[in-house]
Image (spheres, rainbow, N blue to C red):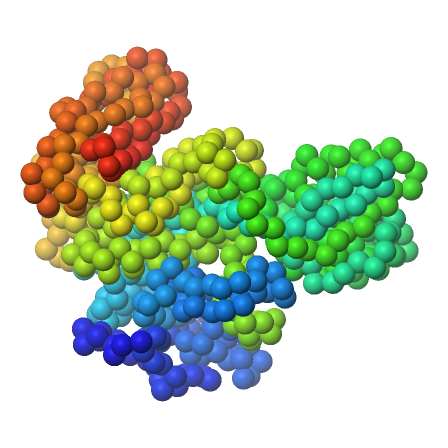
Length: 604
């Protein structure tokens, strides 16, 4: 790589099993933060003294290596996990440089350390912060949330902060990292899966998700975990294959049917270890959430959803001697439909400022292969899932957009992605939401599935800055004292005229309450980042809502010109629920898609 730019002010810290000399033209920053953690829970026990952490930036778990390489890893040939997903791989922006700021430890992530890392990243001169962590749901208000505060400081300095929406799906209103100055990312699937066949008697063949480490030698009897509880355990517990819950005498040499319930606290991997400890030779796991996640089981095993689970139970009830054989996992490409919203991906609406859409965008987060710390499991690459894996995909795209458009603000970068995102899968149908398989809405994918090539040329952008965000906060009810807790600036004051929160120049239009009592007017401004063009508005109105765009044409005569328009919305048939629509500005070449999200209510 070329020499490090002179504008870079960061550096690398010595620590346990890591010296600053290990940094290079790719890894240009490496810092770690634990003062806040140690003040609250005591001195960290390093790995050299029997702990699980290293007092350095070095990764002992794999999560940081995985996310960093996803965002900006260099090209690797023949990358795979034990033969699965084999091929060439690289991060989203492979020529970008990486600065690592380690803030999380085995006891957790602490606010003081987070804020210190944000401050250093801003001073060091990063362009994008990829944040694969977040608060517990429901999220605290912005002025009490370290990520919201730290990311505002970064945003105000022109730094794009990308955050994961959380893994609390599929229930509604569990989205985190919901501040409008954060680019919040949901998780979707790839057109690739890791699959084992489950061969039952009566010539029944089903497919299940698996990355099992071992091979099954021969067909074996299939038993339901609910029918083989260990002494002192209930059938309900043994059906979930909880620790020590299976009767070893009845499980020995058999394949066990287990269940992963929606409220399960134990992992799927642990269940395979429970079956193995009881002498079982295989496991079929019914996943109520149908997450689609591959798991590196310690015995031959496969995961199925509720529908196939019912077929297996029906088969078991139809014969006195049910049997099963589980094949070794294979990599399946060209899976259809894809993408689908991951079941675990947290959903909106936004619980802090409901007139701001969250999440903003969706990206692959299911079964992602990337770098891993060999200190965890002795492997260099691993396949894992989560919105933590989705966020660095978007960070990589943000890096590419910033490189191509150095003057673009974080809001411009967000707008470019949201307004050009895909709404359809590889079968040309609307992207589906798992586990139900219904059409996904904006509370699940935001603007849609990221489309990096289109985002390079969005045509128009919705731009905003820190001043706009301050007005938004004031219009949302924050007083000057609370505002300054977020901005960290004693000069921050609320304007004399408070804007409506829905008028923040966001690349989506969300109204958390609209009744039939009158017409609501929402204002936006768009900036031309393409050729001189005439744009025409097209509206797909939300159900029961009349929408008028004023004006319905916008003529741009120069690059960088900004024009305003308004939407006039009137409820004609309230649904007492959210309804969804779309505003598209088009010049015949570009399609600038703006989500319309309206909660229509019967009464004020």
